[in-house]
Structures are given as C-alpha cells and as structure tokens.
Image (cartoon, rainbow, N blue to C red; front, top):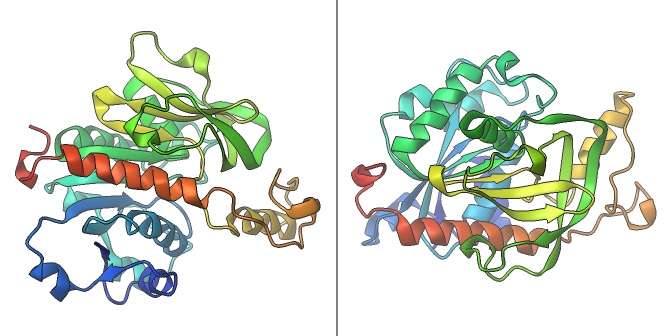
Length: 305
C-alpha cells in the first residue's frame, strides 16, 4: 500500500514520477485498516529535499503510512520558503498530545556545536523524553542520532580533524537483527560529518547494540532497545547527487573540502556518481516499518502504555 501525503506537497510529484505509489485521502478512507502514523522531525536546512528523501523510503513499504511533517516550535528555518513551512509543517508543541507509531529525527548541520549551545536543545530534549510515552519506535539520523545517544546515555561526540565525506564500505555485525534482514555482509553508505561517536564511549550495561560499522568510517548504526530507538550516524537516505551538491556548495563558498571518497567515477567531480546504497536504504526502512507494524498496538491510544 502507498504512502499518504498532501496532494500539493512537492515530494508527491517526485515520488509519483519515480513510481512510488502515493495514496489519495479518498482511497485511504476506503481501506479498512489503520494507517501507520510516522512523524518526521525535519532539522535539515533544505526541508523539501529531506522530506522527499524520507517519504521515498517510507512510501516504498506495502503498508499504508501517514507521514506528519514536524518542526521545532520556535526555530525559524532559513532555507525553506515560509509558505511551505506554514502549509505542510506542524510545530512539535502542536502534536505532542498525539501518538505516533514511528518518529524520525533527521540530522542538522550543527554537529560542531556543543549540544547545550544549540538554540532548540531544550525543546529537543523534551521531544526525546516525549518519544518514550507517545512514540512506539524512533529512528534518529546523523546529528539526530548523536543527540539522542547523548541525551539517553551521555555518549559524547568527538570532532574530527578532517570531514568524513564520501561513500564507505560497512559491515553487517548482526545478521539476525530484524532491521538487517536481507542485508549483505558488506555494503556502502554515504557519510558526511565532522564528528564521530566511538565504541569506547558506549556505557557498559547500557544494552546498546552495534548493528553496522565501517573499518574506515567507524560506528554506523546502534539499536537501543530500552528506548525503542535506532541511531544511524550516516546518510543512508541521501539521493545520488547529495554528496556532490555538498561538495560543489563548499567549493563555491571557498571552504576547504576534499572530493568525497569512493563517490565520483575516476575521482572526476564532473562525472555522474553511481548510487551503490539505494537498495540497502529501502531495505533498512522497509525492515523498520515492518517491525513497527508487527509490534505497535492496534489502538494508537495504547502506545507508550
């Protein structure tokens, strides 16, 4: 079954062109099932691109999904038209009385800031605590994963001397995990960050389980069963062109940046990059959605009880 999103959301046209089934309100109302409610707390600057990337992955599931776009209450986005925000986003304060089967927290380009120096850190901590009573399963991405891991377990992030930037090979450490069902032993995932989390900082007895890791790029994904959360430190949701756009953005701004590793054929920045992670991105999110569906209460009101 397809994803249900507003008719005039820009992501809709993109997904329909890609063959992703998108459901109308009328069709959704005729189906005698409960749609999964998935919230997307979008902290990325280009919100339209990011919401499309996640809608593409969530919408590929055979289940009916209703996605709600959420933003921090008092944070004013600078890189997305205000009319788009008004039309499609809800403040977290306005949805906090509601329940969600799944909730995604994206990354944000603020990783070199101390968590306490982030303008919306206090509210984000309230969001994290709220997920423990109002969300069945949370999926944290990149900086959002670092923030969640710090909030719940005090695990620090460490600044890198050079940006970890490119497409890196990763290892499947837990093939029996339901989230890695069907995964190869070795696979590629885009990485774009100035900080990292380290194995040595994971508290003993925390119950945190490392699911994916890269010999070159370090930790990739951790499961936190106690908090019903996944922490993905890399950008499995990225489009084929995302790393290239980041590269050329920094080049034009005269910022120090190296070519993304293992991305451009022949390391030619004018060549068209090959996407080697798309299938695993869909597999990961499909597995997550399936796990949410299999384990969430049928009555939304029972989530968190």
